[in-house]
Length: 78
Image 1 (spheres, rainbow, N blue to C red):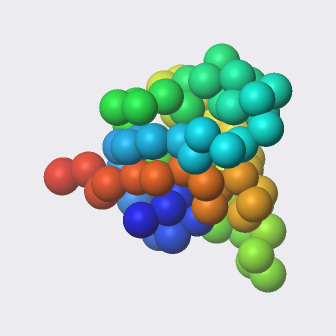
Image 2 (spheres, helix red, strand yellow):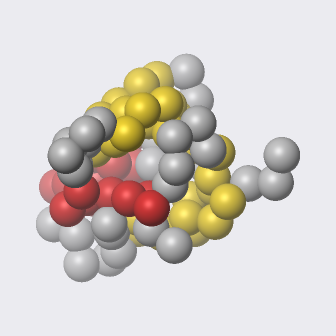
């Protein structure tokens, strides 16, 4: 399952980042906390395939579909 498929208010764990992501983007995602094993929560799904608003730790970010589709997740058990 990719991050783009997460539902609003759902929590998931990051399984992997696609290694073919441009190195600068891959490094930036890691700096922002998008690392394997990190919990992530979807705060908002924007309409019309707009960006996801996500919480990683105590930070909030938005990601567009082309990046979110390249982050693999598994749903966290609540």
